[in-house]
Image 1: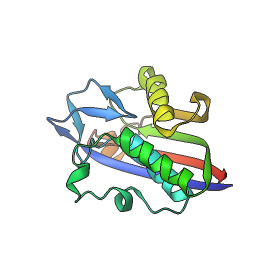
Image 2 (image 1 turned 90 degrees about the vertical axis):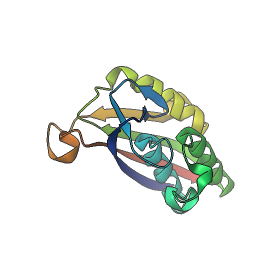
Image 3 (image 1 turned 60 degrees about the vertical axis):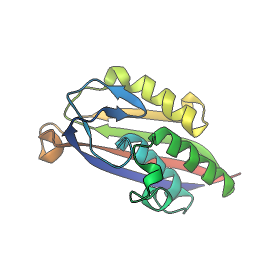
Amino acid sequence: MRVGIGYDVHPLKSGRHLILGGVGIEYPMGLDGHSDADVLTHAVIDALLGAAALGDIGKQFPANDPRFEGASSLDLLSTAAEAVRAAGYRIVNIDSTVIAEEPRLQTRLPEMQQRLSAAAGLKLSDVSVKATSPEGLGALGERAGIAAHAIALIEEA
């Protein structure tokens, strides 16, 4: 058994669509980044790659590579999950948490869970997605950005 952790944070910016866990969220701002800036999916990717000792999202999908500009993070997750499998591992489960003052995400979590599990090639019950608020503390509490944490468990296939 091997465990990997992932973390990502992006600033909020006007003129961008907000995408979390592959789900478009109605909000006046979106996350700024090279791809679709989906912090939740990026954290999951880093957790999977870390568990298999395959580096991180920046190594696999560099921000200076034009192929990934505006890329769907769910597509990147599918590629990362295949890399983990090609390295000889089976993904056991993923647990994740989005940290955002706004928007409130509870009603959208099941859809995020479904999209992440499909992209990773897992059963719905093998993926957990939660959300919490920073309770007004720090930059995230001041609505400057959104962050996410993830952990993945893999085992030799």
